[in-house]
Amino acid sequence: MPSVEAGAAGPLTALPPTALQFAQKAFITSGGRLLLVRKSASDPFHPGRWEVPGGRLEVDADLDLDDHIRREVWEEVGLKVDPGPPFHLWQWFMPDRGGPPGRQVRVVAAARRCRPVTLDATLGNQDAGDHLDGCAWVPLNEIGGYDLIPSLRPVMRAFLAPAG
Image (cartoon, rainbow, N blue to C red):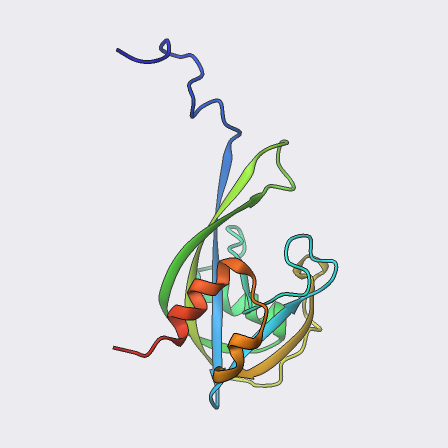
């Protein structure tokens, strides 16, 4: 017997709705270094923390997933990249700032190894919503000294793990 009347709000339907979005993060390496970007003090979620370039899919603008990661990297750090295959999938939840009160966004993300075609990183192409104020090519053995956004930490461990 059901615990609620048919059609009535139950324990799951009583929760605020959740929007689903897809994101990709680019792990761009060159000469034993990884490109990291730093969130600015104005970032509403992770001010001052480090991550890798990337962002959410623009359904109406991105032609495919390769186009999506190329666009994100170009917008955030001004580099052209050759996207490789995904090596890690993960998710996080965040408040939906554009939705109804209490609504959450569930972001499902893929991490991809990318080969840089250009190397001169610049923040000049970003829009205000990116909230970035720095970027650095960091030697792989020094990444542990950087304060990464929490959801990226297990992904970074997967990236740095020996192949095999």
